[in-house]
Length: 123
Figure 1 (spheres, rainbow, N blue to C red):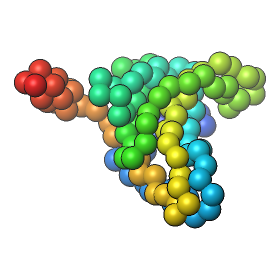
Figure 2 (cartoon, rainbow, N blue to C red):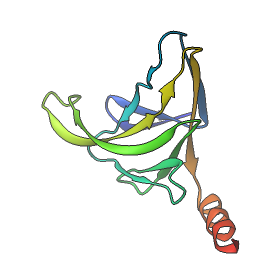
Figure 3 (tube, one colour):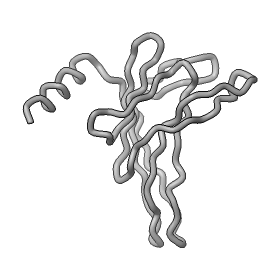
Figure 4 (cartoon, rainbow, N blue to C red):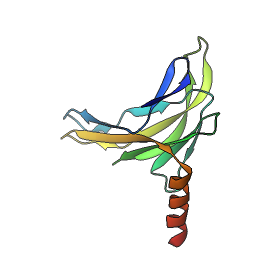
């Protein structure tokens, strides 16, 4: 299933992928997701995921295993002109043995958001 964000952009619902990085000298993990300018990105309360709010109010959660999640500035070129936007950055270090980066993008429902609030409030 996919959801259209703009004429040239789509988000996948329930997408879960792994990227394997080859063995070699230690280096910084190169992984960033650039948002289209109309998408508002913020960090989740636990800072292990990013929340992506569409103009329609739909909320998506991008999470990754074994990396740090942060937000940064980026440039969007999809409309034919450079426009300032945000990006979700997955950072970490890839050791000599290589690494697998696992990430998932999920549509948040009201029920899931309430369950997360209830769980965090119970601690």
